[in-house]
Length: 113
Length: 117
Image 1 (tube, rainbow over the protein chains, first blue to last red):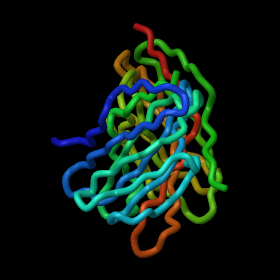
Image 2: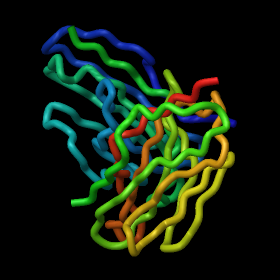
Image 3: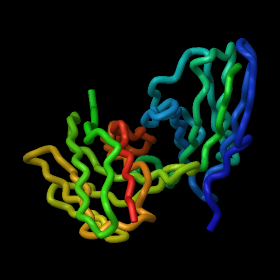
Image 4: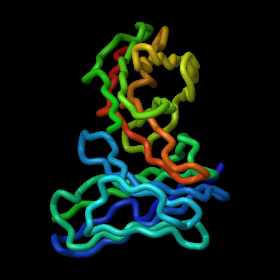
């Protein structure tokens, strides 16, 4: 069965650079969530989209922005990168807005040097 | 705000031992409760869930019962295997957006489970 696809899987950037992560949800899923997981930490909710509109906002820094496109894929844009942004970024998808049951991708590991 | 508290790890057990990982929560409203599992180098996978009080979620020999009176959702398994070694996250979700919308999950800190042969 098709799963959530994230790209790139690994990304290395310098401080103050910009990075973009992409997420392709499970086919027919209309809801996308972004989470940030630091080393040894629990996933922190960043932002979510339902039917291409921002739905819920968590601890997403102002330097980050995200959107969901007409094909339901989503992109997380991170600017002015800081060392503390180094983390595993997970995307998850679900069908029909709130269900509570999320399907996670394998994550994109961002390293900021 | 909403929060989840789960027992600190790592938890180390021998194969075939009985497992309990405690999880308690605070939430406004009536949350749905979940256990997610993360194997090394992988994303999170839903293990089981319960959406209302007294519901019991179960999967792969794991069980958890939604206890509203104690605000708990403890994870149990009668006989663990080496392949159960992973990090387990308790999580909750409270529906805030009526008529649709995607409310994020609130996770606990995770419990690293190590099963020795």
